[in-house]
Every structure is written in C-alpha cells, then in structure tokens.
Length: 325
Image (cartoon, helix red, strand yellow):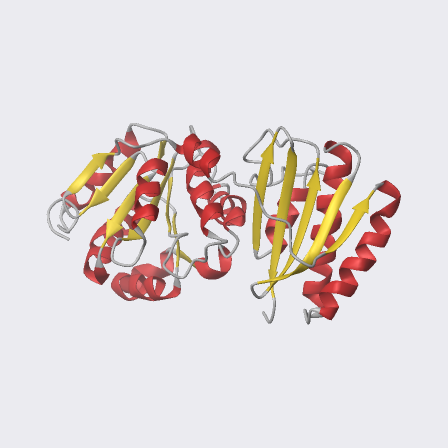
C-alpha cells in the first residue's frame, strides 16, 4: 500500500486524524495481501500507543499473528483477541468485544481494530455480520472511539465490499482515504432483516408460561441427543428458555418453538406475534445491577450464531449451536 498510509512518518496516522474532530470514527480498510494489511493497521496501533490511547485488536488468527510479529515488543501493550472465537457470533461482538473494551476506559479515546468478516464466514453468518457492522454506528454514536474494520478485497465477494461501503462512512485503501458515497447503515439493517424459514423435520412446541419448565427438559434432551457436551447442553436450555420467556412477556403471550439440526448445528427458533422495535436489543452490555432485560444478551453470549427477523406479522429469533465443538 503506497501513499498516505504506507509512510511510517507522522503522515501515516493521517486517515485517523478525523478522530480528533468527531467523537466516533468508523473507517473500513480495504486491503490486498499482507503488505497492505500491515501498512493500514500498524500505524493505527502505533499511533494510538504514541498518543496514550488504549488499543485492542480483534481479527482472525493469521492476521493476529501477522500484527503481533510486526509490532514486536509493542504488542504487549495491545489487547489482542482471536475474532473467530470472540466474534464467532456477530451479535456478541458489540457487547462482548467492542463495548467490553471501550467501557473499561471511560472518558478516554480508544482505538479498536475489528475484523468480523473473512472469507470463511458462512451464508448463515453473513447477514448478521453485515447488520453488526451497520449497528456499530448507532452503538457508539457520540463516544470517543475509533473502530477500524479491515476487508480483504482479494478474497471477499463483491457484495461484501459493497455492503462495507454502506456501513462505513470512511474508506481507506491503496489510494488514500475518502468518504463513502454509499453510506446507509439503516438500509443494511433493513435489507438483512430477512425471513428465517422453518426447520424441516423439527420438533415443534407451543409454549405458554406454565410450559417453560417442560420446554427446558425438552431442550436438554434434544441437545444431549444431538451430541453436545454437558456445558453446551445447559447453554441450549438457557438460550431457549430465555427466548421463550421474552416471547411470553413481549410477544403476545405464547411462543412457537422449533428445535432441530441443520448444517452441522443444533438450531432453536422461537416465533411470536410481537415486533422487535430496537435493532440493538441484546447488543448492549447489561448495566451494573441490571436484573431484567438481559435475556437476549445472554443468548448472544452462549450461542454460536443468532439471527432475527421481525416485522408487523411477528418475530422469529434463531439461535444456532455448532455440533462437535
């Protein structure tokens, strides 16, 4: 990568200079190959360290090791996370990775590199990834945070790169930086609010308040029968009862529950007649002492993938648990 961001002088930090003028900055880094990746990310990290700003990196393993090697001893001053684990469920990234780091440094500007989309992401995962990138803009509005999101233009589909232009107001590439003329994050959230087809051959249960205990036992039996370990069995039971409880309280007093396997996952769907008005529901960390309103947040924490479709006709939340993990 040549020009503004390959130079290791003071101009290397120029793409992030807007951070001093706007509380929240959310650039996409379009890179091709290791050289461009390092040219775009190393100055971001070293600029943060030089300015005394806390910095975290959450990227896939290869890029994590690439950055660790390039930073040398400075890597010990950076929080480094494997995004394939910490962000396996895209719905967990905002509360469990980004906010978890930023909230530890109240009143200070922080920088984060977050790479939630890579070539190995599945077709089931991608819609949640795109919505995640769009929702970051609302989750951090007004906060002194810069989140840089790298995109590998050599391996990602053109549609993914187009969506990145829609979810990031600023784009950095080999030619420098520019404002995105396609920025429309709310349109991305709406576009990927897609119906979730019912599971073929699934166990179907209609649940009311009196049936939550029985639902938990059913979930435990199905999860154990699918081969999940004891801890993951309990995660499935927790997620399913939390989702059903939310539906009973907010979705019309009854929940239709489907449980089955699909594509190497145990899948749980909970459907009701309510409409979810807040696209960030479940993506905000719980406040200290908060008791209620934690259900969907807990589901995002334990599931390997959470997808939601909501509209006037009702809401479906789907939680997936990887078999054999």
